[in-house]
Amino acid sequence: MAYITCTDLAVGYSPYIVAKEINFEINKGDYICVVGENGAGKSTLMKTILHLQSACEGSITLGDGLTPREIGYLPQQTLVQRDFPATVREIVLSGTITKGFGFFYSKEQKQTAENMMEQLHIADLASQSYRQLSGGQQQRVLLARALCATDKLLVLDEPISGLDPSATDELYQLISELNANGTSILMVTHDLNALQYASHVLHVNKDSSLFLERDAYLESKNYIKLNKEESDGMDS
Amino acid sequence: MEWIAKLQYYMGFPFVKYALIVAVLTALCSSLLGVILVLRRFSYIGDGLSHVAFGALAVASVLKVTNQMVIILPVTIITAVLLLAGGKNKKLTGDSAIAIYSVGALAIGYLLMNTFSTSANISGDVCTTLFGSTSILTLTGEQVTLCIVLSIITVLVFVLFYNRIFMVTFDESFAKASGINTAAYQTLIAVITAMVIVLAMNLVGSLLITALLVFPVLSAMRVFQSFRGVIVYSAVLSIFGAVTGILVSILASTPVGSTIVIFDLILFLIHCGIGSLKGE
Image 1 (cartoon, rainbow over the protein chains, first blue to last red):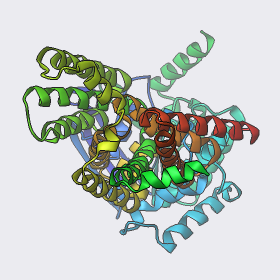
Image 2: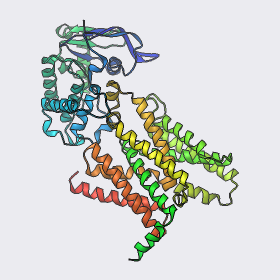
Image 3: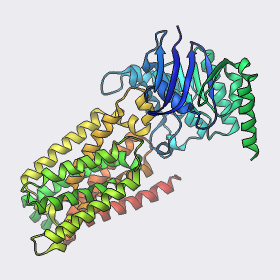
Image 4: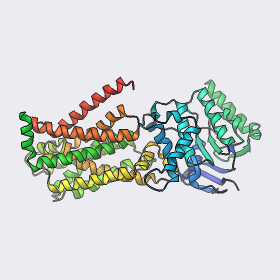
């Protein structure tokens, strides 16, 4: 059974449906890119999958031993975070909260955080302030925090926005490595270059969505149309 | 050392001791809450809520309610919850919502006081409420007890829920996705904020509450990088400013509230200097 199965899902802010008839599933080891035009409902779909808001219609079924708390999440950065006084360690540690019960962090939780910082090569930044890091380093910190919650499934919302090309490549590389180690990836993106890493593509539209394997998607009309719009957007 | 003798003389009075206790506790609570409010871009909520409390006070005096807190506290708490814990799909958000509540309540309050007041010295009454000129020196034992209880609650909430408060403040979406009831924590913070602000009106008056909420935090943010560091240091700074301010105001016979705020301002400027020396 798949980690997540979405059947005839409609998302939006009830009663306003943004996107409907979304059908797809996420299996262990998948790397799914979610694409679509601005306002097509990509971020809304993510929030619905994460139970941040409820589905308007249809169903989301979890399976394969996945619990709602085992979905790691990398949200879009917010204004609040830009000058937030917090060290890298404090932020990464907060990702372990789903694994603890008491008021304070346990030794195991602290160890998990240290391991994740090690794994994402930010251990030397542990005591540094988040607000002084580069955009790429900040994303690594947030990725480490998400991984503290789970290594089964990561949901990423526009992870490369605001990153320069080399930081973008590094982040893609890192995500691919995680995927190769067995973590499933569900990534919302504007950047069609990201598709080269994906195994599947979910194209979200107002009236229906398209879920295909990557290579099949690259030959579909939807991709050609979206690609054209992207490059037109670049020109203007 | 004449001033030490003078200070010792004043310390003999219970009202000075009360003032110091309340000052320390209010400064502690407001600096803790201030960290969250400043980081969530709600710096001006102290001002807004205290004006709402002022409006409620005016209503209470017009209605001749004996225990004015019965009206002031619920009204302020409801406003705080509406402002801080409301859903994201509200039509009025953030600073504009604060402005509406604040100015509206201030106007209603002053109008009521002016029209129905039985006191001969309306502008004096208004001035006292807004700038808290001497009210901290006229505290009753009951008020001091209330202050102590409220401070214990605030500190306990911060110690026990520290990790969750950090998460909710830093990244609400992530906290919610991790299964934390963010709305409950925001309501809790809103309720405590309202209570502390009503309390702080005794100390510095409603116009200067914002200073207690934001100055220590902003000073601490200049020199500390970690969340824990900022919280602890802003509490220390806030208490230091309040105690020094009170002692100086007693010795120099200056208004208590303004003196504390000026000390907070000086501390802030010093920390700005330290911050830029460190190359921030």
